[in-house]
Length: 197
Image 1: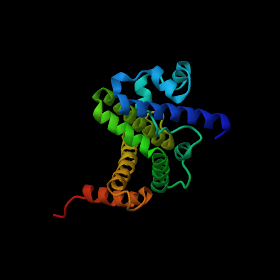
Image 2: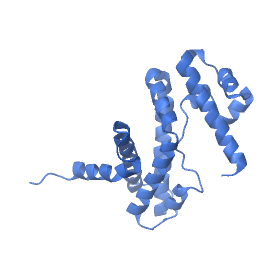
Image 3: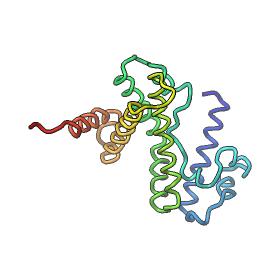
Image 4: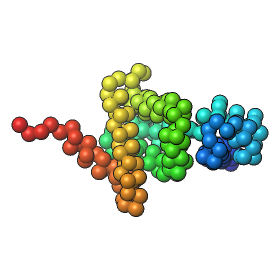
């Protein structure tokens, strides 16, 4: 990441942190875009370079799958060429990204629980993420339009990721999130294996 991109990311995170802090202190209805911008040390115009509305800063979209990332490598058929191994690498990369923003994501969750008007934004973000991952699977398979296999692949990715996070959140002092992936995979296998006759 170049200097310009780093500065943009820092400014975006500063706006998110300011939005979270102000809403936790004052309440959702008592915080404006102008308040958030001032708390982050930028102009209101600068705020709108990063977010379309107040809710976008309170419930930001962290887990993007941009071009040039491990996600693009996955879509191109790599890095190993084996779907399961590459899926694991994609999940581990997403876990690292989640860990980087874990506290912000946790704060977002608390605010959504406290202020139900934020829930549509949260749901839209999660759905956007699932659609992006579905498109990665379709690109990897050479399909212009995602098929059922791509939907299942994306759901598997999401469940592995969310399951590993859930195990870590339940026991933060336990195994690292990345070590929870196999635990989730084993549980998923157990749940989908039909009982013996």
